[in-house]
Image (cartoon, rainbow, N blue to C red; front, top):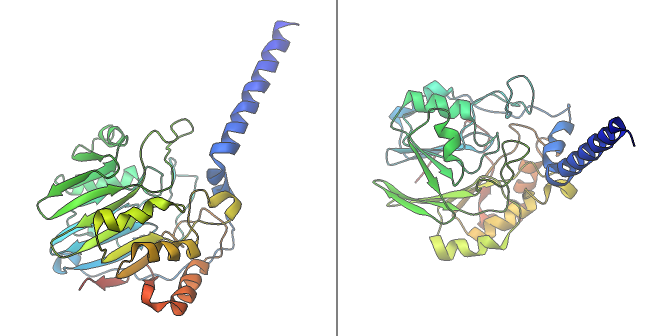
Length: 312
């Protein structure tokens, strides 16, 4: 057999193995390329208020980004203010709506909490801007992601294992597990951790789950962390189920998760802002409303982005 033929066979074999690898481990990523072009633009409320003058509130900015103030301490979960959730500025999943507040108009952020390193949750451009705006902001990330921030000149970083807690002057912060995965490229799958964040202040207990599929691990949360006042839960990016059920809960499963966690208030996030999957735009909201009508004691709401909600 000629050397050229052997080389061609080698290349074909290598390409076939690469394609198989992508089809097995990046099915959800491929699903983002099939987004329905007829998706509606969800309603939202642009924030013009000076939030430095307000205390004890939260607001859903879009995707999984939550801005929260508790007694003057500000927490920002999974901030993404870029136009695309992508390593590139010209291609990749694009925002359906703008951020409801400009990054430069945010109040001074004390703590940023990152659930995992997918581009719609860990947006380096946004983190770099936040670090420049306030060098005292503390960036809390899963184990394995600190080096990414350091390489982008973000230095005030703490890295967490699952169930690791840190006491700060205003709260106890705990990184919690979930059923998801991590990757920034094709060959770093699960090289860093993924999960959610629990914030326990003197008077409030907050849980934020960035992304998850169904998992029995959540049965442990109340035993480990106590009673929750507010739970921020993902309800979007779930269709088609033969692909996404491995990574994302659908609204019915999110509602069951809310019943497991038993928070006083549950807030649906991670829908309608950046489209990765195939569900109709308003379906997550409509389904959660339907389930909550049947079981109103669960108290699961889906406020639109930009609605400022007071924390009692």
